[in-house]
Amino acid sequence: MNQLIEKIQTLGVIPVIKIDHAKDAVPLAQALKNGGLCAAEVTFRTDAAEEAIRLIAQHFPDFLILAGTVLTPEQADKAIAAGAAAVVSPGTNPEVVKHCLQKGITIIPGVCTPSEIETNLSLGLTYLKFFPAEAAGGVNMIKAMSAPYTKVRFMPTGGIHTGNIGDYLACKAVFACGGSWMVPGDKITAGKFDEIEALTREAVAIVKECRK
Image (tube, rainbow, N blue to C red; front, side, top):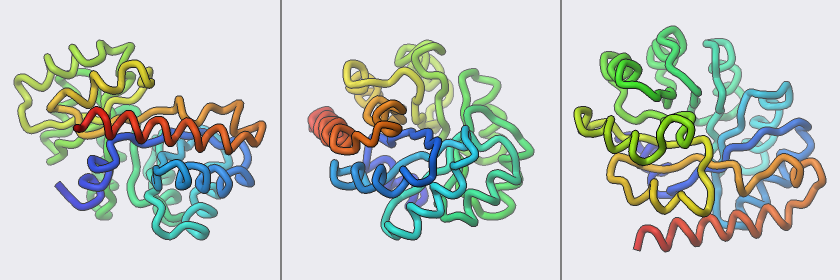
């Protein structure tokens, strides 16, 4: 386990954010930090992602930034150049994975089948994203898949919320969860960063309680 993965595991939950306007990046990161989570996965679902990563990195050097929804080698390079510490993909694209490994970039590819797990194992990766978690079978699916792949650890993302994160974190094969419930798009757009801070603080408390 490298230090970055270890840090993600320590946090337990990573906010997954979609930023439509780069101007919201800094106040959003501040709200997350105030709430106790100095980390986020900024998804490349919008044109503002690269600039948002750059702004967060400039204002908060200690902030752990993951670039999410990375689908191409070019996006991976842009994300790292902007200040991301690692990239996350919704699926497993061997071209993207090999590109990142050749450049020394930490990547957490997405899987939801045994075949995808084996593809990553052949590339030397054992820390993987499980996506879309709830739609793909949730905790029971992770338990079933982890039985033959005992060295693989998962970061489930997709459908995670306050009501089920405890079940995921209780699973030995889960090293952290990704979630967007504490960073809803409407609150980002409306500038309700105080509410995001409160939701983040609640998420941190839940993770702490789950790990007692």
